[in-house]
Image (cartoon, rainbow, N blue to C red; front, side, top):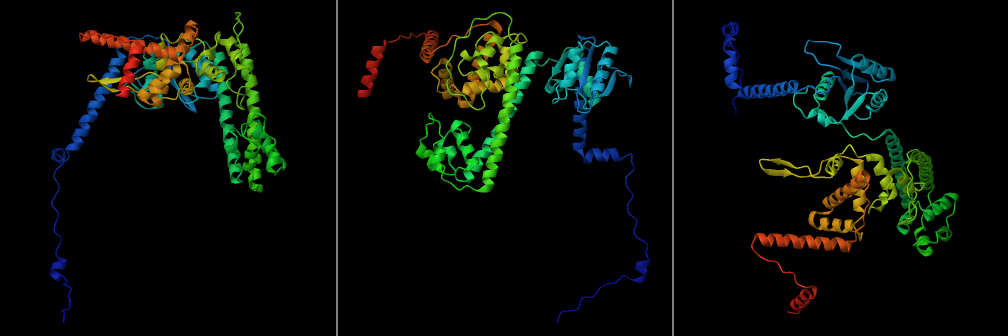
Length: 517
């Protein structure tokens, strides 16, 4: 049998004995040495922190010794509920040189009065969302020289503390010594045109969502209309959808509504319209169609505003009449409701649609983004760099680490890329250049390179009035071949060789003999 377990209890003497005292801790004088020996990572962290602080202080000291270029300057940090304004800098604690003012209209007027009190002439503000627009417009209206600065330019110098109050002081410091570049801003008339065109783009995007809803409702009723016709918002598509909403269900009666120029036959359309008409999906189709029609009426209203603005921006000097140009395709539902090519011609003075890939609507939107006066860009290289279409070379230690284009969401660059991507099947010189770059670099880089070439053409046309001379694919290939021959001859001279060009007939006979063997 297993022996039973017994519990040992302490005796009475041992229970009454006092507990053994713990050893005393080391004195506080020996603590730092012990901690330094046991935790070396804290010393490394403190040393790195002190080094970073010294570096930031050195940058601040360098900034303070720079000569002041803008004596009567101010820096504004933009916010949603309040703006911080700095008109000077002092190390003597609180002063009246920095103030926080609200963003409502009275607060903006108080900012103007505060700037006039301190005799400010030039103001720099950081672009933050859309909160800068009311103050920017008011300051320009009051006669101040205002520059808008992208946030990356106010953060790139080390030593900037991060609070709203100190942000405005840092912007003032950089602006007073002339280290802040101004962001490009179009004229007032061009800003109005740009606002209308951006509103139009928003309406087009919102209307496109309801087109997708119509396609979804048709598909759920097994109506394959989207597979028979390319665009359900065309004349054939709208006529069929309206008839369905009125109650017509016979496929052949619906197919008879096709436009005479529709490529799909009556039999193909009738076969696609044999489905199940469910009440809930018909209701969703009606809702989506009415919503799309609403945005079409919105486009009518905004297009009338765009036309009126273009009439106000017409050049006063007479221009020769614009020769007619044949449309590449019929009118679409989202096309401008007026003749945009002619209206833009009398604003710019040249016909930008002569450039391959630029339609009238694309050219109008591009002009609203970049304006007609490109004097802010000294050279074409500055213009392409602002667009972000040229390589940004990052070189260190004699080696190129990166040569990608600058990341960004420039609307103008997006339009030029869209125009370049439409040249894949073009028989022009730009189309040949795109295909050659595509074989070497791939499609994305080829589109960017072609957009860069388009940007250069637009710059020369707007700034210098240089007309565009069209070049065919054969002419471009001939010039490219001549450049290759010159490069081969140059390389041969360097190597002590000589290049002899054969006649085309001899080269053809030799190629035929090689193929036979």
